[in-house]
Image (cartoon, rainbow, N blue to C red; front, side):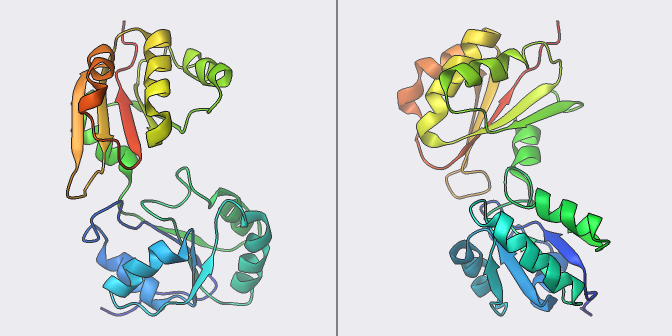
Length: 230
């Protein structure tokens, strides 16, 4: 395949959310061809690059150094070099660093190109068994009880199917908060999507909470919840 890389361009490259086979041919070619890869965690991305025999030319780029590193990346791009941004999994910028870099790149007149691919948001939605015609993605809810409750109160009347992320150690408190605010709606609890031990539990919130001891607590979860359709 002939490289379609363009100098001075910022590429937002989607990477697998679990199964390393879920990457596009175009994404592989871009990662092989760019001058530098800005990776959320170089150790995680390093495994992907090793698997596809892609030379490592990485710079760390994550939530804790984003403000400092983005200026360096912008300067690199303005000098005519090409950069690919990747997150640990899925599409960069979806609950991961990238937004402020993209905004600054656009403001600087730098062409920004998306290389589409895996995203856990759509993957969870399509297997949920819930309506897919309209959906609302809320990302990670707040950690503290008060803001968490307010977060869900603001969503209570939305008719769209709702999608949120949650970590293992906060899952049950979040599900309890959802049921307290929403009532007993249908939910799909998705974990380890595309991996060997992928699991999708489709049931009411009350049933999922009642059977919590049967659920393996490993990895991050995607929650898909029925909207308020009247």
